[in-house]
Length: 86
Image 1 (cartoon, rainbow, N blue to C red):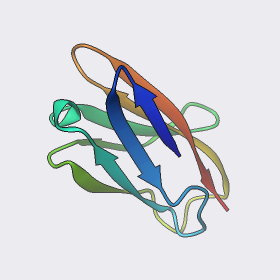
Image 2 (cartoon, one colour):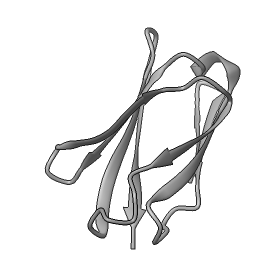
Image 3 (cartoon, helix red, strand yellow):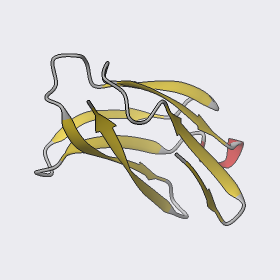
Image 4 (tube, rainbow, N blue to C red):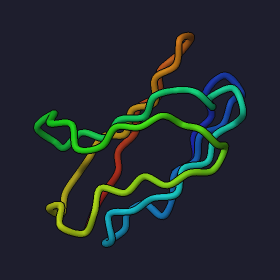
């Protein structure tokens, strides 16, 4: 899923996938932001800081199939999108 936010790009792929691991690519203004993944019930399953324009979000193959929410939080803006684990 690729989305534009005020000209600043966040890309997460492959989505959907069955392994519970996504590649996250962000423009340089998102580096230093927090990234969180929550399950459909709102339980936090992953939390990290974006340190590079390319990084990995790994919730693991033991996590249940379903919809998860990726949230990127910076001082100036937030970004939220769905992750789907098959």
